[in-house]
Length: 306
Image (cartoon, rainbow, N blue to C red; front, side):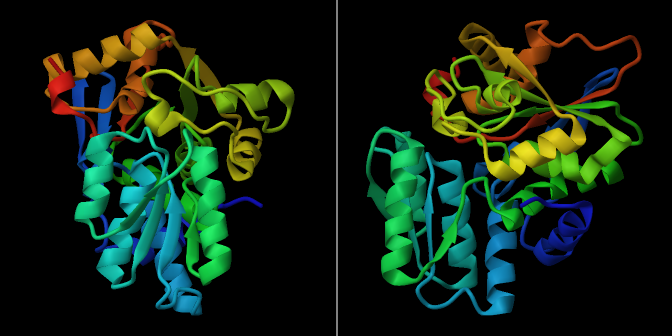
């Protein structure tokens, strides 16, 4: 199971008018931010959710039973938003420790919120049971072809918005975002996944030769807390030669602080992870290299930005 560039191109056509074309800014020579934190619901996730729901609507798979999804926050917000826009109900399963601002936003979007378990895997199991009991449409947070293809539309936008770039740094949780972007870009730019040391599903999978379960923790676990890399992401990582870099907790915290104080970007910890690779020196660009950093989420408590 994988995705190709034609899937991403079809997704771009399908979700046009449903998602924002987010801006890019060159903050210094050779350093470009793609501001996906300005997307609907505060993260990139509506791209994949809309592609999943709209394609299901075309095929008749989306019915009045609506959707079910499991998420620590952002994927749930996206599914709830897309469901509301298409006029169907949404039931979202989240861990009991999901950030309060994200849970409150889910309810504001009209979703039925069910808090269960202490991590994403437990919430997902509950969502699958609900799907089986109700015949609702299951929207996976990162491991469905339609979801991956939708996230990949960011890569197509970059090709249109930026004259030339060499490398894209992308935060990785379950891998749907990095897989989609790498599929869209192909050989036109190097895509590098950046992960917290305490939540490194891509890194583990590349080392083992296949996705493996592992522990998750740390400040970014609410958005990058997948225990296991998605199968689609692993297939794409092998096909497109995606690398993985690991960053420490302190580097993520420092990067988030800098994004706020130097660039006035209010990000969640997961969204600061890609920038942390540059800011900490874990990734050092070559002379003349043009690097895009995907700033992918803004669902955070503003009180923690000082």
